Amino acid sequence: MPVTTLVSAELAQADQQAVLDAITTIRTKLPFLIDLSDDDRAGLVKFGPKSHLFVEKSLQTAQANAQIIPPAFDLAEFARDYALWQALQPVAMQLTQLQEFFDDTVAALGSDLYSEALAAYTYMKASGSGQGIDELKALLGQRFARKSAAPAPAPVPA
Image 1 (cartoon, rainbow, N blue to C red):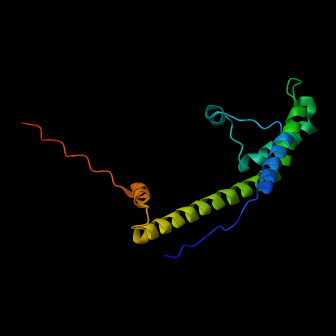
Image 2 (spheres, helix red, strand yellow):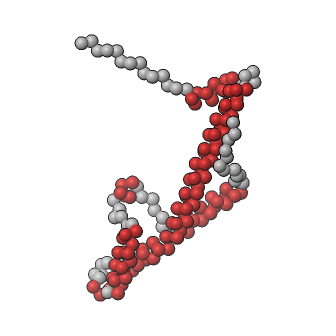
């Protein structure tokens, strides 16, 4: 029973630590990142691709006509927010791609593991008699045990 392996690699402890340290560095360099609750996230005004041009032109127009913007409106904060959003876009793109690679690798690795476990279990079932692993095979076999169907309800007398 050949098993196709999608991921074949090792992660040295030093490399794992280096990756964790790099993530810590990212978090340190982006101390303004926030964690919104589901309710907070749902209450946000949506800013999608169609809104980008509107925001950019609104900022440019407001800056060019600052005399008509009330002093209570923080135009400098508007400009800082837009500059931060622009600076984060290439980072977001790289993180999105990295997350996709990471998720695909973990999914493929999980598939490899389960396929390998199924093959090993099949071999143990076929050749494991008299090898002292009967209890282990029974334990592994519980993964495939079917739950018995609930008995049909008794008819209600009319």
